[in-house]
Length: 237
Image 1 (cartoon, rainbow, N blue to C red):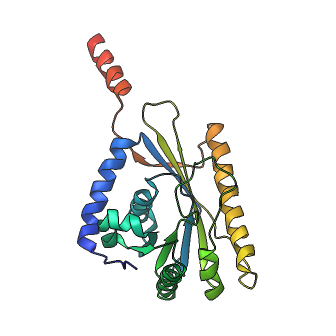
Image 2 (cartoon, rainbow, N blue to C red; image 1 turned 90 degrees about the vertical axis):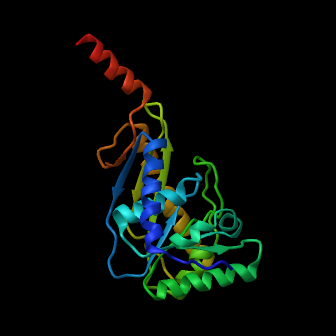
């Protein structure tokens, strides 16, 4: 298992780098947040459809959530991008039950210390529109050990609207109610259902162009069409 080696100075510089990249790649990033419990054991579970998800979560946490966040990441991904260790990632090898249990035990230790833990229960990137969302039982394993954990669903919806670059809508929902006395399979179904329902609700809001519940978290750089509009206005002056 690859353990995290957080470095606060690296995190500060990396936040600047990620912010620059997000402004460059996205036209707007929108956020709706129900609130986040304080001084609690927090497990964040999110859908996973894009390479950007991990970096966006890192940015979101530093900009808004302000938790001491650790994230479970594939072992191969951490070998390919070892800098993730410095921002709190720890590895999981889904192909090895032994290594998976080791990773979950480490996550359990983090929760006991009231660190926030992020898991993408799908385990891999899957198409944004794929249904149902197929979750592993990793989160349920943790909830059987920690019945007092607050499970916060985060859903990411990437889309093109009226501009040249894509937009991202983030929804940080209310804590999911679960019964830790139930079997892992039932807890997993509860979590998967909650994230699916939140994502589908969010999707309908976006399709209907009803973004009143969102605020703009980050504005990207001007698009070519905006520069051309500005230039056209200047020529007419």
